[in-house]
Image 1 (cartoon, rainbow, N blue to C red):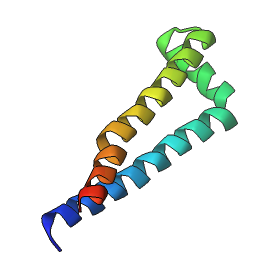
Image 2 (tube, helix red, strand yellow; image 1 turned 180 degrees about the horizontal axis):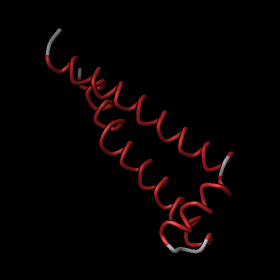
Image 3 (cartoon, rainbow, N blue to C red; image 1 turned 90 degrees about the vertical axis):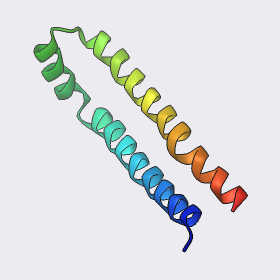
Image 4 (tube, rainbow, N blue to C red; image 1 turned 45 degrees about the vertical axis):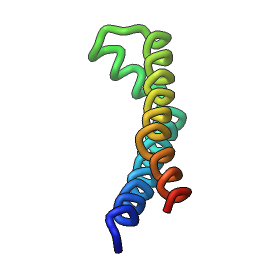
Amino acid sequence: MNSAQSIGQFLGWCTVLNLGVLILAALALVVAGKPIKRLHARLFQLSEDDLSRAYFQYLAQYKIAILVFNLIPYLALRIVG
C-alpha cells in the first residue's frame, strides 16, 4: 500500500469518526437539551438563548471543519488516485 492510499484511508476514517461525534453531539442536544442548557447556564452564567445560539454555531463550525479538513481532502485523493 502506498502512502497516498494510507492517507486516503486515514482521512476516510477521520471523516467517519468526526461525523459520528457530530451526530452524537446533535442527538445529545435534541434528546437532553434542557438539562444540558440548565447546567451550562449555571456554569457559565449565560442565558438559554445564548446557549442555543452557541450550540448551533458549534455544530455548524464543526461540520464545516469536517468538510474542509477530512472529507474534501479524502475525495481529492480518491479522484487523483
